[in-house]
Length: 253
Image 1 (cartoon, rainbow, N blue to C red):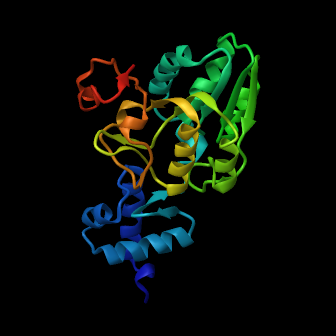
Image 2 (image 1 turned 180 degrees about the vertical axis):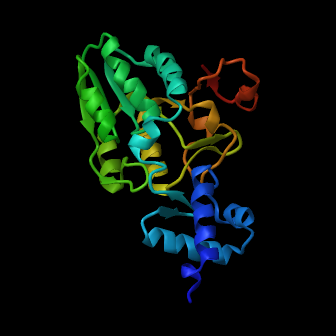
């Protein structure tokens, strides 16, 4: 009888799914959680991916629904509303801006209809964000094109990056999977990190918006260092002690 068919194996793989949903992502951490070797975890992750229950990423895995747009849209909604309210005054009424495809930035895009805009050009790497931008009077919206990232749904890859190079933007609004004061923002996939760097590269000002649950944590793909970020916007008060590691490194709102 194969390991995958045993009750013990089934129980362990169920535990892996539970751990992934609770935020444990890396192979080493999963091995400690389940009390088995990393080799066993890698075999289990392969089996779970073949059953379409998880997606493997570099160094670990995520559950298939953990980073879909619809799933993320319903998480931390109060924090996203606070962040969106802080971001809105940073949007110019004309010129060019860039948006990633995150649900945090989507909350801002939904509120642009409240803002008087005059000949604003906005380019985004997200389908849902593009839909919201295209409904805002005075805003000309562009989607980059590219390949949909399997984990986030964002448009990524060479076509997306090449499209971004055709723009010269005033401000970009980006979020992150996690933010660490030592290495900056990180993502679960290298493609997602690359396309966000491409947005920042064509922008004069980079605004990073993250809710407080993402602070002090790391994913596997480095994106932006803090010296590449001009403004950090969170759901916290700027004088909150949880922002102390970032104070002096970036403007806090």
